[in-house]
Image (cartoon, chains in turn red, yellow, blue):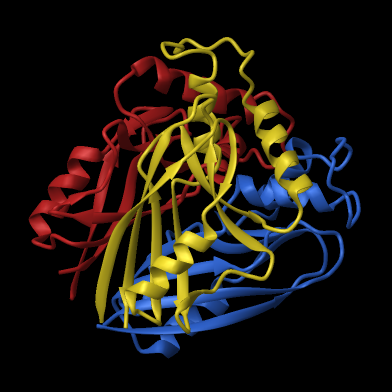
Length: 138
Length: 138
Length: 138
């Protein structure tokens, strides 16, 4: 048993889902660990991680619209130092995931056929986002 | 330190919470690993994992009704290739968990007295669902 | 590779976010494991875990008000054996996290600058809450 760790940097271009599946799979393959457990951890509180449908762009647009509606910018928040999109970003992050654990088998994650891994950017401005990767296995 | 992995197959009978605690505990016991970390990962985007109250069926019905209400079928989604329950299924999955990490001690998970592990089926039709299990420990 | 495990006990004083970052970091430092993967698992269904903004108290108050609004006490739940705050507590727990996985590097978690780890108490009465910690690494 051994471990590998790294940090993925993602340049976002405003709110929305950015797929990182290929970069994660490439890193797993490079690690040489073929059976194990992969953890992803996003080091921010205004973006998050999401496993979602990877085939239909319409489904991703519906996801984006849904989170814009249940944690809206128009609501009256106490915390708004960084603008109207600041507090809803924290709420949308709280409703989704900061960390994910994905088993690895045969040198790949066990993602299902229709699953992709996404960074969910909740701020309007482009950001450089950092995701810690950690893999334990053989 | 060593690891064990497997896939649990669950036959769902339409929307709702299906308890898998006993099957998970049985698998942990069979693995022979008594201290470690268990990961569960559901390989689909229209069902999810949930740790919930395992005693009161009324609590589980309230959970089901709540998610039906905050991510309703009646909403006007762009993505509806597979029917009205398709997009709300992805949203309910996004609001709950795709992966869980549960420590194992004394040959059992450290679930609290009132905690059960559930597969949360979000589609109306029965499905065969696959959950990857991965356990690292001694 | 080795592992360490423990249980953190937190005394809550009613609903709200209770920061546990310092206690978690102290435990990681004491473990002697400097590179690895940390899992936190809350052993209850009426409180949860949340990674949130650690600088602005106003942001945390907004988070508390938001969850009070999307899973309100005033709603008409079937399960209310333990009072009006019982069922909303389970719903708020379902919407946030029961488990977190955080990589450890250099003897500390890789939490970002603005991230804190919080126990999110959803019941009105004070409770003693138990969080299982598990760390695998070198």
